[in-house]
Length: 114
Length: 113
Image (cartoon, rainbow over all chains, first blue to last red; front, side, top):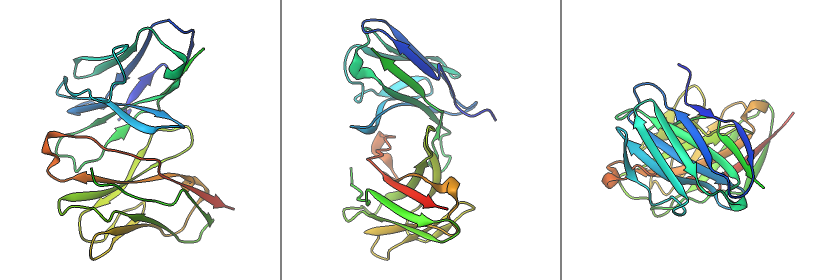
């Protein structure tokens, strides 16, 4: 299994630009999570989906952030417009329901907004 | 959510056992204790989890106190590859509709050669 695949791995963008982060979960997994990690705040859950439906987006910082999951094998996290304080590592993770609680993380997308 | 407390950091020597403590005095009867670790420049990875009994797998052992207010992750022979940030997390068995896994700041383990 290829694991959770994220792209891009690294992105540097200018303030005000739109950023789209992509995730392919492990095939067959029912849950998909988006996390953000910074030195100050640690690892925070932004949003999660179950069977492609957003269940809890209470961690999404503000309206500039949006996430979609159009099908079981693809999700996007979009920031529009981006700001320097959005600089962080964004992780996508997936989990199989009734799996015994193990969540599998991707390698992350390292975002720098200048 | 019930909270866990870990030291900020620990050091160990290669090929020696390491005991990583975690306090969770407000744990509820339905909370599982999970451990994840994050190697440098990687996403977190699952290590082990348990409810009441001690657990062993190929990566580590989890020793849970009888009152469940604390637990210890045991790496039997630390290697350089075990240098990582370790997260001790509680997750309700019944969820209540939430799948949130709250990671906190974790504990940085340094392994000396």
